[in-house]
Image 1 (cartoon, rainbow, N blue to C red):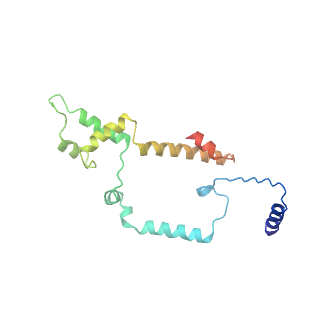
Image 2: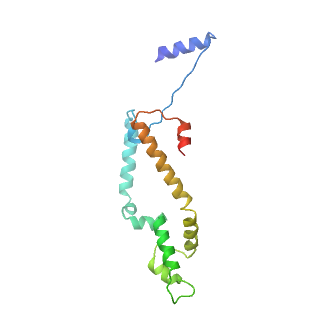
Image 3: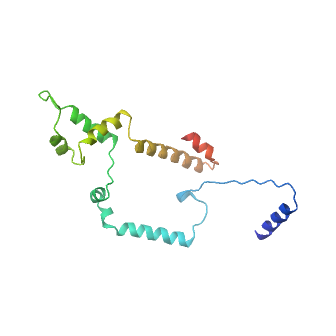
Length: 160
């Protein structure tokens, strides 16, 4: 390696034409070809242990409440809106907030109902759309990696 570097420096110092070609590959997760260093492995083990030690993360409901990690699926939003809209034949104004909150306790505020309507009109939240797009690009990247294809930035941009 040192000899190659010395030859390259001599070539550049002599003033001759130098062609430089660089090929960059994208390795991720378990598909990387390189061996991980011991320090990286130890830090990953420490992170896993710290996640396991946090009692709040074991109880999913407690974690959702404590860390405010609520996210509602499109199906759940559709159920809420259907429940609100189909109040029954004797109702003039729809369902009361008390009835809605009793049926769907995870909704903290009545303003969520109007947000749910907006999200359903636009076919999901921006976050849900980007997550769907991310998973699609990731699947294509894994597929290309398994086929040993070279993936460039432009190809990823085209997939998006």
